Image 1 (cartoon, chains in turn green, blue):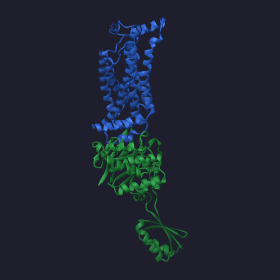
Image 2 (cartoon, rainbow over the protein chains, first blue to last red; image 1 turned 180 degrees about the vertical axis):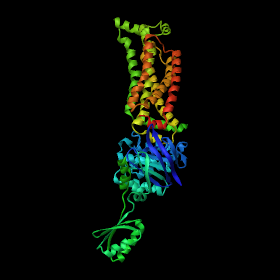
Image 3 (cartoon, chains in turn purple, blue; image 1 turned 120 degrees about the vertical axis):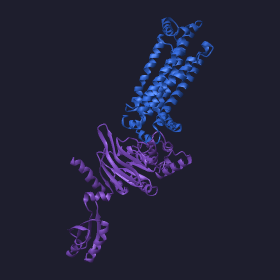
Image 4 (tube, rainbow over the protein chains, first blue to last red; image 1 turned 135 degrees about the vertical axis):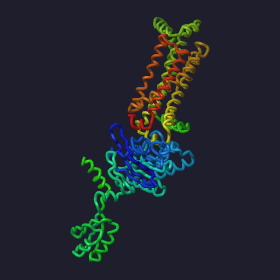
Amino acid sequence: MSEIITEGLTKRFNSFTAVDHLSFEVGEGEIFGILGPNGAGKTTTIRMLASLLTPTEGTAYVGGFDVVDDSLKVREIVGILTENPSLYDRLTAMENMEFFAEAYGVSDRQARSKKIRELLDFFDLWHRRDDKVGTYSKGMKQKLAIARALVHDPDVLFLDEPTSGLDPRSSKDIRGLMEELSRREGQTILLCTHRLEDAERLCSRVMLINEGGMVTIGTTDELRSQIAGTPILRVRLGEVSETVVDAVRSMEGVEEVVVDGNTLSMSVKDADEVTPYVVRGVVMAGGMVQSVEVLKPSLEEIYLKLVVDEDEAE
Amino acid sequence: MRLSKALLVFRKDWREVGRNWEVLTPIALVPLLFSVVIPLIAISAPGQVNTGTSREVLIESIMRGAPAGVMEMLAGFTEDQQLTYVLLVYMFAPFFLLIPVMASSVIASDSFAGEKERKTIEALLATPLTDGELLFGKMLASFVPAMAVTILSFIAYTVVVDVGTYGLFGAPLLPTLEWFLLIFLMTPALSLASIGLTVLISSRVRGFKEAQQISVVLIIPIIGLFIGQGTGALTLGPPVILALTALLAFFDLLIFRFSVLLFKREKVLTTWK
C-alpha cells in the first residue's frame, strides 16, 4: 500500500514554477530519496506534503489523507526535519521536546516522558537535557531536531538533509536509526539529501529532480542501467589464454570482452546471475582466477550524468 | 479551537520571553520610570520650585489644562495641593498608556517577527495546531504580560502617589474612577490594538527590532492625548475614556480580521519577509 501518492503535484510562486507536475508513490515502510541540486524543488515538495504549502495544481495524499482537505490529519501523522533545526534556543532540550510532544498530541505525561528519555538517550543528549539549546553545537541541534521529529511516533517522516552537520559516527547512527525505523517500525521515510552516499545506502528508490521537474525515478540499479547500460564484470587471472577468452565470449549474458594484461573486462546483463557461470567457465578453460569485481556506476555518477548533463544541455 | 493548545503556545512563548533580556529590559525599565521615578519627581516638584516667576509659570501652565470641574473641586485646597493633584491624578494618566503599548509591541514583535527571524517558525507551523490556536496563543503571550505589567505599574504608582502625598492631603488620592476605567477598560483595548498592529507589521519586516520600531507609531495618539490634556482641549474623564475605548475596540476588530487573514501558514512561510 502506498503511504504517499502524488499526481501532477505543482507549485507556482507567481510566474516561477518551483515544483512542476511531480507524480510518484512511496510505499509503506519504504525509504524514498529525493535528490537534486539547490533550488530543484525538494523543500517545496516536502512543504506541500507536510501541508505547509497548498499545491497550485495536482493532488497529494499522505497516509491516505489529502494534504489540502485533511491538512491537520496529515500534520498529525507526519514528523518533519526542516532545513533548519527550528529549535527554541532559549528553551532547554527537555522544554523543546515537551512542547512539540504536546503540540503533536502526546498528552499522556508518562508516555511522553518515556519517549523523550528514549530519544534523548539514543542521541546521547540526555545528560544535556536541562541545558538551553542555544548552548548546543550544530550537530547536537541536528540530533535534537531529529529527536523532535520522532517524538510522536509518526507514520511518515520527512527528513531534509538529516546528516548535515553531523560527525561520521553520528551520521552512521542516524542512518542506522532510519533503517531500523523503516524495517522494524514500518515508518515511511522521505529523505531529501545532497549526500548521495546516504541515498545509496538507505533508499530503496530515489527520484532525481531538477528545476522542479522529475528527471528520473527508480531503484539505484535501475538508474545505473539507464546511464551505463550494463554493469562491468572484471576478472583478474594468473595468465590470459585464447581458450579462456573464447570460452568467456561464448557465454550467454556476456556482451563485450576486453583484454587488458591479465584482466578480462566484460559487459554483462545481470552481474549477479552471470558472475558464477563466468568464474566456472574460466576455471574449466584452465584459467586461474585471482579476483572478481563487479563495477557499477555510483549514485554520484548517475546524479552527475542525469542532473548536471541536463543543465549543461540547456 | 482547542484552548489547551493555545495555552501550550502561550506557555512556550511566556518561557521564551522570560529569558530574553532584550525584551525584559524595556518592559521592566519603562514601567519603573513611569510608576515610580517620575511620580516621585512630580511629588517633590512643588516643594522644589519655591518662589518667584518659575513657580507661577509652572502652576499656571499646569492649571491651565485642568478641567473646570476639578478646579471647582480643588477650590478650597492650597496651591501645592492643587498642583500635585492635577499633575498626578490628571496630567499623568495619558503617560501611563505608554506602558501597555510598549510592553505588548515589544513582546508581540519578538513572538511573531522574532520567531520568523530565528527560523523557528517552520517547525511550529508543521505541528497539528490550527492557525487560530497559534495566533490566539501568541496573542495571549503578548497580552497577558503587557496587562500584568500595566496593572503592577498601576499598583506601584498608586502606592507611590498615596504614600508620597499623604502628608499633603491626609487621605489617599488614588485610585479614582477615571484611573480604574483607564487601566481596566482602555489599556486592554489599547494593548490589543498594539498586538494586532504588530502582527500586521511583522508580516512586512525582516526582524523583531524593525517590527518594534514601527509599532511605536501607536505612541503618536497617546502623545496627542497628553497634549490635549495639557492644553485643556481634552479631559480624560469617564465619558472620554469610554468613547476612546469603544473606538479602540472597533479598531481592534478591524485589525484582528486582517491579522487572522495574514496569519495563514502559507502566507507566513512565503510572503512574510
